[in-house]
Image (cartoon, rainbow, N blue to C red; front, side, top):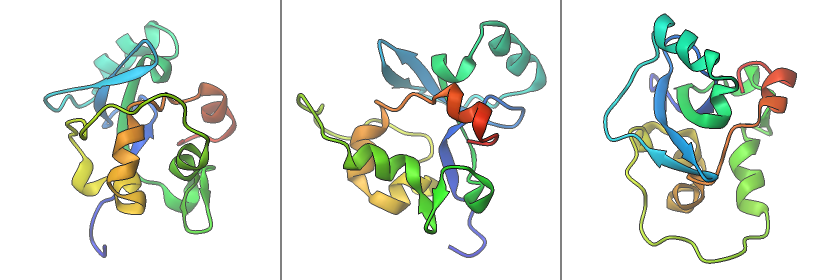
Length: 132
């Protein structure tokens, strides 16, 4: 992966981030086309309060600069995939703007994609670990 930009699929609402989708009833509805966050969009989304609870964003993975990084890997997707699952999973993979470069996909494969739509960024974690 030398020279490759690996992307975090659960980043904060910052200038330069990519809007991945919006959260509806606890599930992410992924965007069909890229929307890059500029200062005006970021300001507007922040005005809604807690944009990370309403939308999912992507930006370059911070690796060891992130509070979720442990043992050379992203702890978010490991935690999600190791948690007991209830109910049935939707069939097929969701469309995704970043799959080829996604940290979670590169780390855990298609199984991560199946659960990705159920991950909503927790602002408590963001406050404790900027860049998560």
